[in-house]
Image (cartoon, rainbow, N blue to C red; front, side):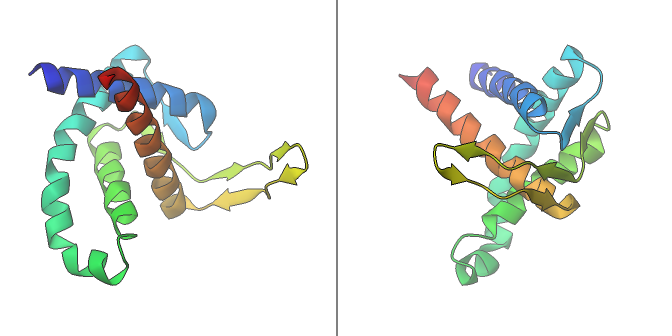
Length: 133
């Protein structure tokens, strides 16, 4: 129970962080929605091993990149269950650092789900690494 609560709190925190950084994730309703979204995402994530088992042939053919689609599917289920969490198409503006610059990227709805799920998993992994040590 304590692990589920910790994971839910981490998910809620990451929802807040990403909604502040990326225009494609909109969370309406304040703190309560973040906590409910984190809890529901934790519960839905228990389905992930089953989804990976079903998608094993596709995952093997694509050398593991289909797992991004599975993560996007989990976020799609979350947006259906919690309608205050909205993922929408967005534009990632160009960034220049020193002599390097990135181009402006436009994400459609599907790529928005995949990108947000990818960024979400990276931030969760970093936070879990920090809190374990």
